[in-house]
Amino acid sequence: MSIAIYTLTSALHNEEAVANVTNEFLGSLGIDYVLKGQDYGDYGDNTLNVIYVRTGGTEGLFRQILPMLQSRCPEPFYLLTSGKSNSLAASMEILSYLRQRGVVGEILHGSPAYISNRLRLLKTVSEAKKSLVGCRLGVIGEPSDWLISSGADASVVKDRLGVELVSIPMDELLQTIASTPEGAVDETSPSEVIRKALPDAQRIYVALKTLVGKYGLQGFTLRCFDLLTTVRNTGCLALAKLNAEGIVAGCEGDVPAMLSMKIVQSFLGISGFQANPSMINPETGDMLFAHCTIPLNMVERYELDTHYESGIGVGIRGYMKEGPVTIFKVSGDLGRSFIAEGQLLRNQSKSDLCRTQQVIQLADKSQTSYFLTNPIGNHHIIVPGHHKALLEQFLF
Image (cartoon, rainbow, N blue to C red; front, side, top):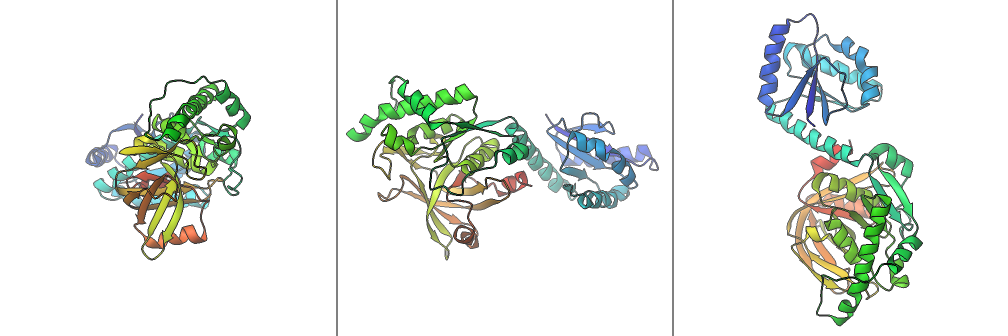
């Protein structure tokens, strides 16, 4: 699917002259697009729908077709303008009319390079949003007892993202694990404790994959600490492997963290590292994040260890490439978000923390105040690269 450009043109303007401007202007953008003209019959069916306001005097025309446009694709509205023939002035009047009615919109105006970069960004965001529609994410067990702020409003998630949350009892997973035969294990370890734990860690992986298939899930979050007392093992290895296979797999039943991971995956193809902030230095912007699992496709290498808190099962110590990172989180009602860019300074392996440990320096050290005064729960999602512009536009 492509960028579809629809047009608004006043009958008072000479069509030949306007067409010449159109060809020159759109050609200068250097983008792939389909010019639809004034036939809005498939408006909303394309990856990105743009209205090219070619001339002034088009405000009334837009008002006439607005109900039809909203019935097909409510918002936002993107108004492209070259600035010729009073097109910018008309676009401003149209956008003001939309804003008075609480409708989101934006005028795309500036240099050809600015407009083309903006259109490419908006197309990427639109593709990500469309990929979420119809997605099913499982909640296996309730959120862990200590996650007192990490639930979600399923109806809001469905309305805003098109994502369905599917509740799956923890007992069903336990029964599936019990009925899963022991299979081949790919991993090994010099530690006898870990080698003995690997067959059951593999069974947990197979059982989770079975539930993913049974319920048609694209991801899930797991009340994983219950496994410590029931099967005397952890889900850390299973989550690391499933995330690497493209199935979003979150820890501790944290639904907002899972949603954040799925949003990230829709852009980047990776789920992100769900981690706890363990240390914050407001004076330098340095933060330490840690957790006992990380997607295996995010790391350059990894080691197996026990789960930190319990000392049993199999945990993952992953080493991600140092460099630019983005930290991201949305709230369960999708009303708040946090996005920060920074640098992964180093990976470390201290024995008194969850096994994967990352020291990150925020680009804006003042953003450390968010964690200390107004955080969205404790888990946050870390991904390689700087992606603030994409994530901000997604939440627009």
